[in-house]
Image (cartoon, rainbow, N blue to C red):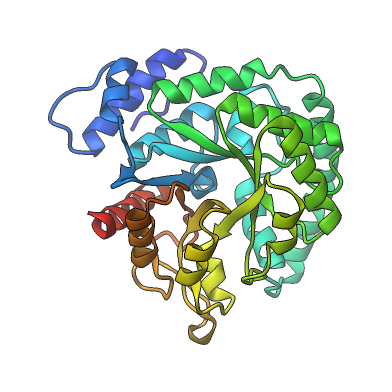
Length: 348
């Protein structure tokens, strides 16, 4: 696959390239050569028997090019037609200052710290240095966000829509306790400009913060999906839900199982009206070691939950989050394709 030269190739030309590549990878029998054709190719896309399969763009974090155009190409090559968008692709497209930190190195260290895994002395030094850099960078980004034109996000959304990809969630780093109301407003306005119906973030474990976000979401006409890891319990979201009708769940079924919750399917049925989107991955339960495994080899009832969504006509999307170790010789796109194939086999 040739690397796209973004300095000489227009976005329209890029979409043509993406169509050609996607068509060949999906085994199409004819050549796809224009954005209008892509709309036909991906009509319905990864909407399978009424169940919307999406992907969080975090799944492509190992890929070398994290631009808006490259990320779109990864999504198309994966066969996915709906996304929960991390902040980077859209914000860099809109002119955000360049991040000095290699996030491909930073993400794994952050995850180890979050999951309380032991860090080596060298890893601790790297993480501390990155944290300090990130603090400075966040201050620079805050200044940029105060003046960015929301129309840039509308332009981004048009590019994705032309390729047949809808954006249902947006996850910029703008909703933390240290972020001002103006930061939060920026994130919610950008999400709406992208066409998203929800913003997502890690649950802050702070009742005042979930109240603040819920009330601001009501003001800006959007929903807030709170994501959890192994702290998820059946009552984890109760306070946030009681605080505002704009608050909801960005449930992670794999983490929910790894946390030791044994009634995951019953929980999905009970909470379906409050689930805005659900991350799907295959993790082992606590007794089996909590591993993050290729789909179909762990303890998460992925096929069963997809069938429940189909049979009960639940409207929230199931979001592929690729977190298991990528096999030698493969890459993120190929593995997301496998995850989508798993979903198709479960639903058809």
